[in-house]
Length: 124
Image (cartoon, rainbow, N blue to C red; front, side, top):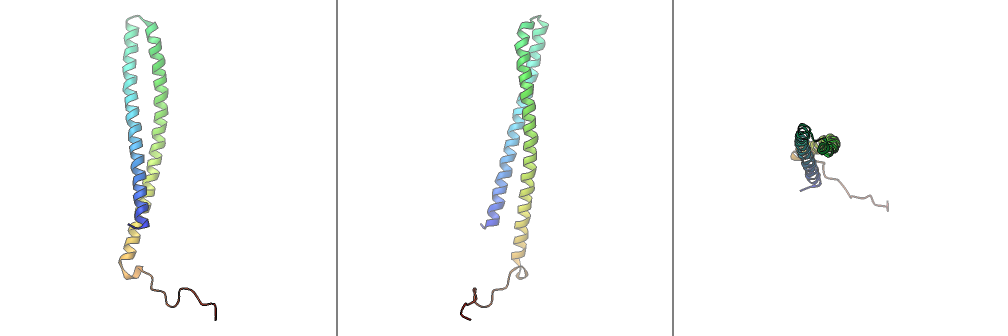
């Protein structure tokens, strides 16, 4: 595996990490939305029963959950942007590796061997 292949593999791992992180955030947001729905149901039930005192802590929890969900949705947007950037970088490196492989495949892509000594002599 050459250096270019290592870079492609590193960028592929980076993109996969970004994908996993985004999936985890989306799962968290989904759980928070379902918790919010459950809390709304509990709040409605407490109000129906005529017990506003028990609804107050539920309303506070629901408000905190809504703020947390908004923060997670902001993180999802940022993670989506980071994933798109990682995907662009990976594509760029894959393209460079493919071009390098194409150029190395034929004799026209290779440099001719150097003629003469690698370093000029000082004695002349």
